[in-house]
Length: 488
Ligand SMILES: Nc1ncnc2c1ncn2[C@@H]1O[C@H](COP(=O)(O)OP(=O)(O)OP(=O)(O)O)[C@@H](O)[C@H]1O
Ligand SMILES: [Mg+2]
Image (tube, rainbow, N blue to C red; front, side, top):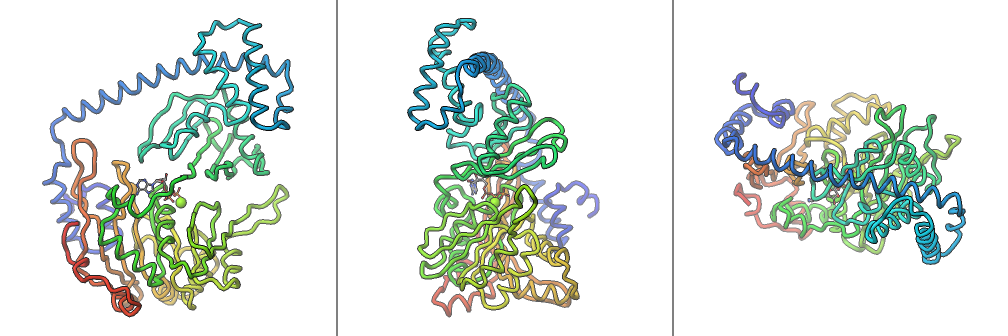
Protein backbone atom coordinates (compact mmCIF):
# COMPACT_ATOMS: atom_id res chain seq x y z
CA UNK A 1 0.00 0.00 0.00
CA UNK A 2 2.61 2.51 0.98
CA UNK A 3 4.77 1.75 -2.01
CA UNK A 4 1.82 2.42 -4.22
CA UNK A 5 1.08 5.63 -2.47
CA UNK A 6 4.59 6.81 -3.04
CA UNK A 7 4.11 6.59 -6.77
CA UNK A 8 0.82 8.31 -7.03
CA UNK A 9 0.80 11.80 -8.36
CA UNK A 10 -0.25 14.85 -6.45
CA UNK A 11 -3.89 14.68 -7.37
CA UNK A 12 -4.18 11.33 -5.66
CA UNK A 13 -2.16 12.57 -2.75
CA UNK A 14 -4.77 15.27 -2.47
CA UNK A 15 -7.40 12.62 -2.07
CA UNK A 16 -5.40 10.88 0.60
CA UNK A 17 -4.90 14.10 2.49
CA UNK A 18 -8.40 15.35 2.06
CA UNK A 19 -9.96 12.24 3.32
CA UNK A 20 -11.90 9.48 2.71
CA UNK A 21 -11.16 6.02 1.67
CA UNK A 22 -7.71 4.76 1.02
CA UNK A 23 -9.34 1.89 -0.81
CA UNK A 24 -10.65 4.32 -3.35
CA UNK A 25 -7.19 5.74 -3.82
CA UNK A 26 -5.83 2.33 -4.53
CA UNK A 27 -8.43 1.54 -7.14
CA UNK A 28 -7.84 4.85 -8.85
CA UNK A 29 -4.14 4.21 -8.93
CA UNK A 30 -4.77 0.89 -10.51
CA UNK A 31 -6.89 2.45 -13.20
CA UNK A 32 -4.20 4.95 -13.93
CA UNK A 33 -1.62 2.25 -14.29
CA UNK A 34 -3.84 0.32 -16.67
CA UNK A 35 -4.74 3.30 -18.74
CA UNK A 36 -2.75 4.90 -21.48
CA UNK A 37 -1.33 7.49 -19.09
CA UNK A 38 1.98 5.81 -18.60
CA UNK A 39 4.79 5.78 -21.11
CA UNK A 40 3.35 5.00 -24.52
CA UNK A 41 6.74 4.74 -26.19
CA UNK A 42 8.82 7.88 -26.49
CA UNK A 43 7.81 8.83 -30.03
CA UNK A 44 4.86 11.08 -29.27
CA UNK A 45 6.90 12.76 -26.55
CA UNK A 46 9.82 13.31 -28.92
CA UNK A 47 7.44 14.62 -31.53
CA UNK A 48 5.98 17.05 -29.04
CA UNK A 49 9.42 18.23 -28.00
CA UNK A 50 10.40 18.79 -31.62
CA UNK A 51 7.21 20.71 -32.26
CA UNK A 52 7.80 22.84 -29.20
CA UNK A 53 11.36 23.61 -30.28
CA UNK A 54 10.25 24.57 -33.79
CA UNK A 55 7.59 26.83 -32.31
CA UNK A 56 10.15 28.45 -30.05
CA UNK A 57 12.48 29.12 -32.95
CA UNK A 58 9.61 30.71 -34.86
CA UNK A 59 8.82 32.97 -31.94
CA UNK A 60 12.48 33.91 -31.52
CA UNK A 61 12.64 34.89 -35.18
CA UNK A 62 9.44 36.96 -34.97
CA UNK A 63 10.77 38.54 -31.83
CA UNK A 64 14.05 39.58 -33.46
CA UNK A 65 12.06 41.28 -36.19
CA UNK A 66 9.75 42.98 -33.70
CA UNK A 67 12.69 44.20 -31.64
CA UNK A 68 14.25 45.81 -34.69
CA UNK A 69 10.95 47.51 -35.46
CA UNK A 70 10.64 48.57 -31.86
CA UNK A 71 13.96 50.36 -32.06
CA UNK A 72 12.89 52.09 -35.29
CA UNK A 73 9.55 52.98 -33.78
CA UNK A 74 11.29 54.36 -30.73
CA UNK A 75 13.54 56.50 -32.89
CA UNK A 76 10.64 58.11 -34.77
CA UNK A 77 8.53 58.39 -31.65
CA UNK A 78 11.33 60.32 -29.93
CA UNK A 79 11.78 62.57 -32.95
CA UNK A 80 8.07 63.20 -32.92
CA UNK A 81 8.17 64.19 -29.27
CA UNK A 82 10.82 66.80 -30.13
CA UNK A 83 8.62 68.44 -32.71
CA UNK A 84 5.11 67.91 -31.46
CA UNK A 85 3.33 68.17 -28.14
CA UNK A 86 1.63 64.80 -28.08
CA UNK A 87 -0.29 65.68 -24.92
CA UNK A 88 -2.28 68.14 -27.04
CA UNK A 89 -3.64 65.23 -29.03
CA UNK A 90 -5.60 64.00 -26.06
CA UNK A 91 -7.68 67.16 -26.10
CA UNK A 92 -8.80 66.42 -29.65
CA UNK A 93 -11.64 64.19 -30.77
CA UNK A 94 -10.26 60.66 -31.26
CA UNK A 95 -10.62 60.40 -35.05
CA UNK A 96 -9.10 63.81 -35.51
CA UNK A 97 -6.23 63.08 -33.13
CA UNK A 98 -5.43 59.85 -34.96
CA UNK A 99 -5.39 61.60 -38.29
CA UNK A 100 -3.13 64.39 -37.02
CA UNK A 101 -0.70 61.90 -35.58
CA UNK A 102 -0.73 59.79 -38.72
CA UNK A 103 0.00 62.82 -40.91
CA UNK A 104 2.79 63.98 -38.62
CA UNK A 105 4.51 60.59 -38.68
CA UNK A 106 4.22 60.27 -42.44
CA UNK A 107 5.76 63.69 -42.87
CA UNK A 108 8.53 62.97 -40.42
CA UNK A 109 9.38 59.72 -42.15
CA UNK A 110 9.62 61.37 -45.53
CA UNK A 111 11.95 64.06 -44.14
CA UNK A 112 14.07 61.76 -42.04
CA UNK A 113 15.09 58.55 -43.75
CA UNK A 114 17.61 57.37 -41.18
CA UNK A 115 15.84 54.01 -41.24
CA UNK A 116 15.16 52.53 -44.64
CA UNK A 117 11.64 51.17 -44.61
CA UNK A 118 9.53 49.23 -47.06
CA UNK A 119 5.97 50.44 -47.58
CA UNK A 120 4.74 47.58 -45.39
CA UNK A 121 7.35 48.26 -42.72
CA UNK A 122 6.41 51.91 -42.67
CA UNK A 123 2.76 51.03 -42.16
CA UNK A 124 3.61 48.77 -39.27
CA UNK A 125 5.77 51.41 -37.59
CA UNK A 126 3.03 54.01 -37.95
CA UNK A 127 0.56 51.60 -36.38
CA UNK A 128 2.98 50.95 -33.53
CA UNK A 129 3.42 54.64 -32.84
CA UNK A 130 -0.35 55.04 -32.77
CA UNK A 131 -0.60 52.12 -30.35
CA UNK A 132 2.03 53.74 -28.19
CA UNK A 133 0.36 57.13 -28.11
CA UNK A 134 -3.27 56.08 -27.85
CA UNK A 135 -3.16 52.60 -26.44
CA UNK A 136 -1.01 50.22 -24.46
CA UNK A 137 1.91 50.01 -26.89
CA UNK A 138 3.15 46.51 -27.71
CA UNK A 139 0.12 45.01 -25.93
CA UNK A 140 -2.39 46.50 -28.37
CA UNK A 141 -2.30 43.65 -30.93
CA UNK A 142 -2.92 41.20 -28.08
CA UNK A 143 -5.77 43.27 -26.69
CA UNK A 144 -7.42 43.26 -30.13
CA UNK A 145 -7.15 39.49 -30.38
CA UNK A 146 -10.37 38.10 -28.95
CA UNK A 147 -8.96 34.60 -28.59
CA UNK A 148 -6.58 35.88 -25.88
CA UNK A 149 -7.99 35.48 -22.38
CA UNK A 150 -4.99 36.49 -20.28
CA UNK A 151 -1.95 38.64 -21.00
CA UNK A 152 1.00 38.11 -18.70
CA UNK A 153 4.05 40.34 -18.80
CA UNK A 154 7.03 39.17 -16.77
CA UNK A 155 9.44 42.02 -17.25
CA UNK A 156 9.97 43.87 -20.54
CA UNK A 157 11.22 40.95 -22.56
CA UNK A 158 8.78 38.25 -21.70
CA UNK A 159 5.13 38.38 -22.69
CA UNK A 160 2.85 35.36 -22.47
CA UNK A 161 -0.80 34.93 -23.33
CA UNK A 162 -3.39 32.35 -22.58
CA UNK A 163 -5.49 31.14 -25.48
CA UNK A 164 -8.09 28.40 -25.21
CA UNK A 165 -6.77 27.44 -21.84
CA UNK A 166 -3.11 27.15 -22.83
CA UNK A 167 -0.22 29.45 -22.04
CA UNK A 168 1.81 30.59 -25.04
CA UNK A 169 4.97 32.63 -25.30
CA UNK A 170 4.60 35.59 -27.66
CA UNK A 171 7.23 37.52 -29.62
CA UNK A 172 6.08 40.87 -28.19
CA UNK A 173 8.52 42.86 -26.09
CA UNK A 174 9.00 46.26 -24.56
CA UNK A 175 12.08 48.35 -25.14
CA UNK A 176 13.15 48.23 -21.52
CA UNK A 177 11.88 48.48 -17.94
CA UNK A 178 11.07 52.15 -18.38
CA UNK A 179 8.94 51.55 -21.42
CA UNK A 180 6.93 48.91 -19.57
CA UNK A 181 6.62 51.18 -16.52
CA UNK A 182 5.22 53.94 -18.73
CA UNK A 183 2.49 51.64 -19.97
CA UNK A 184 1.72 50.48 -16.42
CA UNK A 185 1.60 54.10 -15.23
CA UNK A 186 -0.82 54.89 -17.99
CA UNK A 187 -3.15 52.06 -16.95
CA UNK A 188 -3.16 52.85 -13.25
CA UNK A 189 -3.32 56.63 -13.57
CA UNK A 190 -6.48 56.28 -15.68
CA UNK A 191 -8.24 54.81 -12.67
CA UNK A 192 -6.81 57.44 -10.35
CA UNK A 193 -4.19 55.20 -8.78
CA UNK A 194 -0.46 55.33 -8.52
CA UNK A 195 2.35 52.83 -8.51
CA UNK A 196 5.79 53.58 -7.15
CA UNK A 197 8.32 52.26 -4.70
CA UNK A 198 6.15 53.10 -1.72
CA UNK A 199 3.13 51.32 -3.16
CA UNK A 200 4.60 48.83 -5.60
CA UNK A 201 1.50 46.77 -6.35
CA UNK A 202 -1.85 47.86 -7.61
CA UNK A 203 -5.10 46.55 -9.06
CA UNK A 204 -6.75 48.44 -11.86
CA UNK A 205 -9.11 47.97 -14.70
CA UNK A 206 -8.97 48.75 -18.39
CA UNK A 207 -11.73 50.73 -20.05
CA UNK A 208 -13.27 47.56 -21.43
CA UNK A 209 -13.56 46.03 -17.95
CA UNK A 210 -10.46 43.81 -18.12
CA UNK A 211 -8.86 43.19 -14.73
CA UNK A 212 -5.26 44.30 -14.26
CA UNK A 213 -2.66 43.69 -11.59
CA UNK A 214 0.73 45.37 -11.68
CA UNK A 215 3.66 44.79 -9.39
CA UNK A 216 7.05 46.43 -9.76
CA UNK A 217 10.54 46.18 -8.26
CA UNK A 218 11.66 45.87 -5.55
CA UNK A 219 8.86 43.35 -5.02
CA UNK A 220 9.00 41.96 -8.55
CA UNK A 221 12.56 40.80 -8.99
CA UNK A 222 12.78 40.65 -12.78
CA UNK A 223 11.27 43.97 -13.66
CA UNK A 224 7.74 45.31 -13.72
CA UNK A 225 5.14 42.62 -14.05
CA UNK A 226 1.65 42.96 -15.41
CA UNK A 227 -1.23 40.47 -15.43
CA UNK A 228 -4.34 41.20 -17.43
CA UNK A 229 -7.46 39.03 -17.27
CA UNK A 230 -9.39 39.96 -20.37
CA UNK A 231 -12.99 40.90 -19.96
CA UNK A 232 -14.92 38.39 -22.01
CA UNK A 233 -17.31 40.25 -24.25
CA UNK A 234 -19.22 37.09 -25.02
CA UNK A 235 -19.54 35.38 -21.67
CA UNK A 236 -19.67 31.62 -21.80
CA UNK A 237 -23.07 29.99 -21.38
CA UNK A 238 -24.14 26.63 -20.02
CA UNK A 239 -24.44 25.43 -23.62
CA UNK A 240 -20.81 26.39 -24.18
CA UNK A 241 -19.77 24.46 -21.08
CA UNK A 242 -21.70 21.43 -22.32
CA UNK A 243 -20.12 21.72 -25.77
CA UNK A 244 -16.64 22.04 -24.26
CA UNK A 245 -17.39 18.98 -22.19
CA UNK A 246 -16.71 21.03 -19.05
CA UNK A 247 -19.84 19.62 -17.43
CA UNK A 248 -22.28 16.78 -18.12
CA UNK A 249 -25.94 17.14 -19.01
CA UNK A 250 -27.23 15.65 -15.70
CA UNK A 251 -24.88 17.91 -13.71
CA UNK A 252 -26.15 20.91 -15.63
CA UNK A 253 -29.78 19.98 -14.92
CA UNK A 254 -29.08 19.46 -11.26
CA UNK A 255 -27.20 22.70 -10.66
CA UNK A 256 -29.83 24.67 -12.55
CA UNK A 257 -32.54 23.24 -10.27
CA UNK A 258 -30.33 23.90 -7.25
CA UNK A 259 -30.01 27.59 -8.12
CA UNK A 260 -33.71 27.93 -8.88
CA UNK A 261 -34.53 26.05 -5.69
CA UNK A 262 -32.55 28.60 -3.61
CA UNK A 263 -29.77 26.40 -2.36
CA UNK A 264 -26.72 28.24 -1.05
CA UNK A 265 -23.89 27.29 -3.36
CA UNK A 266 -20.16 27.71 -3.09
CA UNK A 267 -18.20 27.47 -6.33
CA UNK A 268 -14.72 26.35 -5.48
CA UNK A 269 -11.62 26.23 -7.66
CA UNK A 270 -8.02 27.26 -8.19
CA UNK A 271 -6.83 30.35 -10.02
CA UNK A 272 -8.35 30.67 -13.47
CA UNK A 273 -10.32 27.46 -13.09
CA UNK A 274 -13.55 29.09 -14.28
CA UNK A 275 -15.12 30.08 -10.95
CA UNK A 276 -16.35 33.49 -12.04
CA UNK A 277 -17.58 32.10 -15.36
CA UNK A 278 -19.54 29.41 -13.54
CA UNK A 279 -20.90 31.95 -11.04
CA UNK A 280 -22.09 34.08 -13.93
CA UNK A 281 -23.81 31.12 -15.55
CA UNK A 282 -25.40 30.01 -12.26
CA UNK A 283 -26.63 33.53 -11.61
CA UNK A 284 -28.39 33.35 -14.94
CA UNK A 285 -30.69 30.68 -13.49
CA UNK A 286 -32.01 32.99 -10.78
CA UNK A 287 -35.67 33.78 -11.57
CA UNK A 288 -36.11 37.24 -12.99
CA UNK A 289 -38.56 38.28 -10.25
CA UNK A 290 -35.80 38.08 -7.64
CA UNK A 291 -33.96 41.14 -6.44
CA UNK A 292 -30.25 40.36 -6.73
CA UNK A 293 -27.37 42.19 -5.10
CA UNK A 294 -23.92 41.40 -6.47
CA UNK A 295 -20.74 42.21 -4.56
CA UNK A 296 -17.36 42.09 -6.24
CA UNK A 297 -13.88 43.54 -5.99
CA UNK A 298 -13.88 44.20 -9.65
CA UNK A 299 -17.22 43.90 -11.38
CA UNK A 300 -17.05 40.96 -13.77
CA UNK A 301 -20.51 39.47 -13.52
CA UNK A 302 -23.00 40.25 -16.23
CA UNK A 303 -26.47 39.37 -15.07
CA UNK A 304 -29.36 39.54 -17.48
CA UNK A 305 -32.14 39.86 -14.91
CA UNK A 306 -33.95 43.18 -14.66
CA UNK A 307 -33.63 43.60 -10.90
CA UNK A 308 -29.94 43.69 -10.11
CA UNK A 309 -27.95 46.04 -7.89
CA UNK A 310 -24.23 45.83 -8.54
CA UNK A 311 -21.81 46.79 -5.80
CA UNK A 312 -18.06 47.04 -6.02
CA UNK A 313 -15.45 47.49 -3.30
CA UNK A 314 -13.20 50.52 -3.20
CA UNK A 315 -9.53 50.51 -2.29
CA UNK A 316 -8.11 53.15 0.03
CA UNK A 317 -7.15 56.43 -1.59
CA UNK A 318 -3.62 57.81 -1.68
CA UNK A 319 -3.87 58.93 1.94
CA UNK A 320 -4.95 55.45 2.93
CA UNK A 321 -8.54 56.50 3.57
CA UNK A 322 -11.98 55.63 2.30
CA UNK A 323 -11.58 51.90 1.83
CA UNK A 324 -14.84 49.99 1.47
CA UNK A 325 -14.39 46.27 1.94
CA UNK A 326 -16.46 43.32 0.83
CA UNK A 327 -17.54 42.93 4.43
CA UNK A 328 -18.91 46.49 4.48
CA UNK A 329 -20.82 45.76 1.31
CA UNK A 330 -22.22 42.44 2.51
CA UNK A 331 -23.46 44.14 5.68
CA UNK A 332 -24.95 46.95 3.67
CA UNK A 333 -26.58 44.60 1.20
CA UNK A 334 -28.56 43.01 4.02
CA UNK A 335 -30.33 46.32 4.47
CA UNK A 336 -31.24 46.40 0.82
CA UNK A 337 -33.87 43.67 0.96
CA UNK A 338 -32.08 41.28 -1.36
CA UNK A 339 -33.65 37.99 -2.45
CA UNK A 340 -30.24 36.79 -3.49
CA UNK A 341 -26.72 37.84 -2.66
CA UNK A 342 -24.06 36.96 -5.18
CA UNK A 343 -20.55 37.39 -3.82
CA UNK A 344 -17.74 37.41 -6.40
CA UNK A 345 -15.23 35.72 -4.14
CA UNK A 346 -15.34 35.08 -0.44
CA UNK A 347 -11.85 35.39 0.96
CA UNK A 348 -11.92 37.20 4.27
CA UNK A 349 -14.01 38.41 7.16
CA UNK A 350 -17.09 38.90 4.94
CA UNK A 351 -17.50 35.12 5.25
CA UNK A 352 -18.90 35.72 8.73
CA UNK A 353 -21.67 38.02 7.54
CA UNK A 354 -22.33 36.02 4.43
CA UNK A 355 -22.86 32.83 6.41
CA UNK A 356 -24.95 34.60 8.99
CA UNK A 357 -27.12 35.86 6.14
CA UNK A 358 -27.39 32.37 4.66
CA UNK A 359 -28.41 31.04 8.04
CA UNK A 360 -31.05 33.67 8.58
CA UNK A 361 -33.22 33.28 5.56
CA UNK A 362 -31.16 34.65 2.70
CA UNK A 363 -31.25 31.43 0.83
CA UNK A 364 -30.19 31.10 -2.73
CA UNK A 365 -26.93 32.94 -2.25
CA UNK A 366 -23.95 32.20 -4.44
CA UNK A 367 -20.24 32.77 -3.95
CA UNK A 368 -16.91 31.53 -5.24
CA UNK A 369 -13.98 30.49 -3.12
CA UNK A 370 -10.36 29.71 -3.86
CA UNK A 371 -9.84 26.05 -2.91
CA UNK A 372 -8.80 22.77 -4.49
CA UNK A 373 -11.39 20.39 -3.10
CA UNK A 374 -14.85 20.77 -1.56
CA UNK A 375 -13.44 19.77 1.82
CA UNK A 376 -10.70 22.33 1.45
CA UNK A 377 -13.32 24.96 0.61
CA UNK A 378 -15.04 24.36 3.95
CA UNK A 379 -11.78 24.54 5.90
CA UNK A 380 -11.06 27.81 4.18
CA UNK A 381 -14.35 29.22 5.36
CA UNK A 382 -13.52 27.99 8.83
CA UNK A 383 -10.17 29.79 8.69
CA UNK A 384 -11.84 32.98 7.57
CA UNK A 385 -13.91 32.92 10.74
CA UNK A 386 -10.84 32.54 12.93
CA UNK A 387 -9.02 35.27 11.05
CA UNK A 388 -11.99 37.56 11.60
CA UNK A 389 -11.42 37.05 15.32
CA UNK A 390 -14.23 34.61 15.94
CA UNK A 391 -13.53 32.45 18.85
CA UNK A 392 -16.30 29.92 19.15
CA UNK A 393 -15.84 26.20 19.64
CA UNK A 394 -14.89 24.46 16.39
CA UNK A 395 -17.90 22.23 16.56
CA UNK A 396 -20.33 25.15 16.72
CA UNK A 397 -18.53 26.94 13.97
CA UNK A 398 -18.66 23.88 11.73
CA UNK A 399 -22.32 23.38 12.51
CA UNK A 400 -22.97 26.91 11.32
CA UNK A 401 -21.05 26.31 8.12
CA UNK A 402 -22.80 23.00 7.53
CA UNK A 403 -26.22 24.51 7.89
CA UNK A 404 -25.45 27.60 5.80
CA UNK A 405 -23.93 25.98 2.73
CA UNK A 406 -25.87 23.37 0.81
CA UNK A 407 -23.71 22.60 -2.16
CA UNK A 408 -20.07 22.92 -3.20
CA UNK A 409 -19.28 22.83 -6.90
CA UNK A 410 -15.63 22.16 -7.64
CA UNK A 411 -13.99 23.57 -10.77
CA UNK A 412 -10.58 22.52 -11.99
CA UNK A 413 -8.28 23.64 -14.75
CA UNK A 414 -6.57 20.46 -15.77
CA UNK A 415 -3.24 19.82 -17.49
CA UNK A 416 -4.78 19.85 -20.95
CA UNK A 417 -5.93 23.41 -20.32
CA UNK A 418 -9.58 22.37 -20.11
CA UNK A 419 -11.80 23.52 -17.30
CA UNK A 420 -14.01 20.86 -15.81
CA UNK A 421 -16.61 20.71 -13.10
CA UNK A 422 -14.96 17.84 -11.29
CA UNK A 423 -17.36 17.51 -8.39
CA UNK A 424 -20.80 18.49 -7.17
CA UNK A 425 -20.94 17.78 -3.46
CA UNK A 426 -23.81 18.18 -1.05
CA UNK A 427 -23.26 19.16 2.57
CA UNK A 428 -25.29 16.80 4.72
CA UNK A 429 -24.75 17.92 8.28
CA UNK A 430 -22.53 16.99 11.19
CA UNK A 431 -21.25 13.75 12.58
CA UNK A 432 -19.50 14.41 15.88
CA UNK A 433 -17.50 17.50 15.10
CA UNK A 434 -16.94 16.72 11.43
CA UNK A 435 -18.99 18.14 8.58
CA UNK A 436 -20.38 15.32 6.48
CA UNK A 437 -20.84 15.61 2.79
CA UNK A 438 -21.64 13.40 -0.14
CA UNK A 439 -20.59 13.68 -3.69
CA UNK A 440 -23.48 13.61 -6.15
CA UNK A 441 -21.60 13.98 -9.44
CA UNK A 442 -17.96 13.74 -10.33
CA UNK A 443 -15.48 13.67 -13.15
CA UNK A 444 -13.79 10.30 -13.03
CA UNK A 445 -10.33 10.79 -14.38
CA UNK A 446 -8.64 7.84 -16.05
CA UNK A 447 -5.39 9.17 -17.39
CA UNK A 448 -3.82 11.20 -20.13
CA UNK A 449 -3.70 10.27 -23.81
CA UNK A 450 -0.62 10.67 -25.95
CA UNK A 451 -1.62 14.17 -27.05
CA UNK A 452 -1.72 15.29 -23.45
CA UNK A 453 -5.52 15.33 -23.19
CA UNK A 454 -7.05 14.26 -19.93
CA UNK A 455 -9.13 11.12 -20.36
CA UNK A 456 -12.12 10.48 -18.15
CA UNK A 457 -15.87 10.64 -17.90
CA UNK A 458 -18.58 12.31 -15.87
CA UNK A 459 -20.74 10.18 -13.67
CA UNK A 460 -23.27 10.41 -10.92
CA UNK A 461 -22.24 8.58 -7.77
CA UNK A 462 -25.60 6.93 -7.24
CA UNK A 463 -26.39 9.09 -4.23
CA UNK A 464 -29.79 10.79 -4.31
CA UNK A 465 -29.20 14.24 -2.85
CA UNK A 466 -30.90 15.18 0.41
CA UNK A 467 -32.23 18.30 -1.25
CA UNK A 468 -34.19 16.18 -3.73
CA UNK A 469 -37.45 16.39 -1.80
CA UNK A 470 -37.11 20.07 -1.06
CA UNK A 471 -36.54 20.75 -4.75
CA UNK A 472 -39.48 18.55 -5.71
CA UNK A 473 -41.75 20.46 -3.34
CA UNK A 474 -40.90 23.58 -5.27
CA UNK A 475 -41.88 21.89 -8.50
CA UNK A 476 -38.27 21.21 -9.45
CA UNK A 477 -38.61 17.46 -9.79
CA UNK A 478 -35.66 15.86 -11.47
CA UNK A 479 -35.81 12.38 -12.99
CA UNK A 480 -34.21 9.86 -10.62
CA UNK A 481 -32.17 8.42 -13.48
CA UNK A 482 -29.84 11.39 -13.57
CA UNK A 483 -28.46 10.25 -10.22
CA UNK A 484 -27.79 6.73 -11.43
CA UNK A 485 -24.20 5.74 -11.54
CA UNK A 486 -23.55 5.78 -15.28
CA UNK A 487 -21.04 7.38 -17.57
CA UNK A 488 -22.24 10.56 -19.16
N1 LIG B 1 -15.39 25.78 -19.11
C1 LIG B 1 -14.54 26.61 -19.72
N2 LIG B 1 -13.99 26.29 -20.89
C2 LIG B 1 -13.13 27.12 -21.49
N3 LIG B 1 -12.74 28.30 -21.00
C3 LIG B 1 -13.25 28.67 -19.83
C4 LIG B 1 -14.17 27.85 -19.12
N4 LIG B 1 -14.50 28.47 -17.97
C5 LIG B 1 -13.81 29.63 -17.98
N5 LIG B 1 -13.07 29.77 -19.08
C6 LIG B 1 -12.16 30.87 -19.41
O1 LIG B 1 -11.08 30.79 -18.50
C7 LIG B 1 -10.68 32.07 -18.06
C8 LIG B 1 -10.74 32.13 -16.54
O2 LIG B 1 -12.10 31.99 -16.15
P1 LIG B 1 -12.65 32.68 -14.82
O3 LIG B 1 -12.36 34.13 -14.81
O4 LIG B 1 -14.07 32.27 -14.72
O5 LIG B 1 -11.78 31.92 -13.75
P2 LIG B 1 -11.62 32.22 -12.19
O6 LIG B 1 -11.49 30.90 -11.53
O7 LIG B 1 -12.73 33.10 -11.73
O8 LIG B 1 -10.24 32.99 -12.19
P3 LIG B 1 -9.59 33.86 -10.99
O9 LIG B 1 -9.05 32.88 -10.02
O10 LIG B 1 -8.50 34.61 -11.69
O11 LIG B 1 -10.68 34.74 -10.46
C9 LIG B 1 -11.61 33.05 -18.75
O12 LIG B 1 -10.94 33.56 -19.87
C10 LIG B 1 -12.79 32.22 -19.16
O13 LIG B 1 -13.41 32.72 -20.32
MG1 LIG C 1 -12.65 34.92 -10.72
